[in-house]
Image (cartoon, rainbow over all chains, first blue to last red):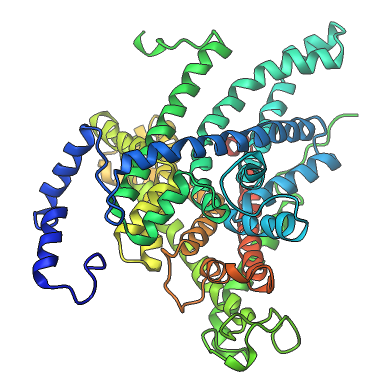
Amino acid sequence: MSLAGERAHPEIIENIKKEMGIDKGFIRQYAGYLKLLLQGNFGTSYYTNRDVLKDITAKFPNTIVLAFAAMLIAVPAGTALGFMAAYRKDGFIDKCVNAVSLAGLSIPVFWSAIMIMLLLSLKLKLFPPSGTGDARFLVLPALVLSIPAAATLARITRITVLDILRMPYINTAKAKGLSSLNISAVHVLKNAIIPIVTIIGLDFGSYLNGAVVTETIFGWDGLGRFTMDGIIKRDYPVILGCVITGTVVFVLVNLITDIAYHFLDPRIRLDAGKN
Amino acid sequence: MPEKIKSPESGNNLKLLLPAGIIMFLFVISIVAPFLSIYAPNKIDLDSIKESPGMNHPFGTDSKGRDVFSRVIYGAKTSIGVAVAAAFVSAFIGFFVGIVSGYFGGRLDTVLMSATDFILSFPSLLLAIAISVVLPPGIYTVMIAISTVSWTSFARLIRGHVLTLRDMPFVDAARAVGCGDLRILLLHIAPLCVPLGLIMMGIKMGGFVLTEATLSFLGLGAQPPAPTWGSMISANRAYVLTEPWMVIFPGLAIFITALCFNMAGESLKDRLGATGDRL
């Protein structure tokens, strides 16, 4: 309705309906969409009439850059906090890390985005508040996006490392007289990597989720903002295209994580299911 | 010195009761709000537009002169209510799928678990957004969206638990005295899964509050002028530089509520011990 305007001639409305195919039944519309999809065609936007796939491929790299920048912050920060907390179990640092990570999990991304923008760019003028461009534009959205991911990672790392520290081989290593640095680097870190990599992979969905809000607020021209634009205008081909792309990426990342296991720990066989 | 064995109860009650108490308090206040002497949440007062926090308006007023404090109070009803309702709905679906799938196994199990995997293969918020876009916006849509996305974790947890229970002697005993499948499921297995389901609800609730807030921030939740924390933030985003209180207070409300739910969830998780670590 909004496409034709409020006082459009009934004939024009009929024409638009025919063009969009919504004069046909639900099943036939769905089948039509699937057919387009199999041909690698996401349809065209209702509003701009542009090819949705083309827009997505243009914006997608920006989102990937943002997600990796966020990972670059979240992974070192999260694992370091988790390790520190595990080594000082029940101590002051452990309690602090616990509090910080719980807070990080509870903070709404859209709110922290606005607050960080207010503080770091509008008041302190350290970074540009919004836009797409070089690394300076990337810092704030990546920071916001990394908060919940770092919190999750810190918690998982802590539990994993605690489990490992309880293992008999750690005692053996201590009894052999190895230095604590050696034990941490070789015995603990190596065994902790698998669960940590799992979480990084599984948590990739949270970057995609967070990107919708973060990109919108910081004006980063990626898939998330494109989704948001589609939602506001109820531009269904755009929304569907973005959701499908996000899902495909999410599944692919999980697949890559599974494959990475094999290289990190040769004991895990990729063909284990066949036996 | 030998390590002191801590009973799971000691010192943990406060960690559970304090956040739970805060949430109850917020919720009760928002229910009885019409009887308190605060401003009506949607009362537009053009004489007091954008007033900074003070005696009359503890959290200030927004661009239409509405009292931010009373809007935050009224908003608690939606935010907490939707999270709790979504938790019940997703727990119910997940519980049903979990016990049926775990108990009967076989082809039914394969079908139900494939459905679970199918849902889990979507980034959760994107799927919730896609659902909310198709349905008319409102709190029921938010509930449906959150439940559709999150029943899966309940189903997997309960299924795993049923798989261990199924082979217990008491189930064999029940079958030996002639109980049917339905009776065994409802009276022998389901009651033993309830505590686990309730704990999972506690753990998930913080995330549900955040999802509800995000969806209403995106304009997919309760429609204006209904006061919800997410929509208050999105509506007043433009004023954040000059009148930050319009955005700070609703955000703090979301943060505190989610934090309380997460703290309560964590102390529930601690009670489970090693099982809890995997949740």
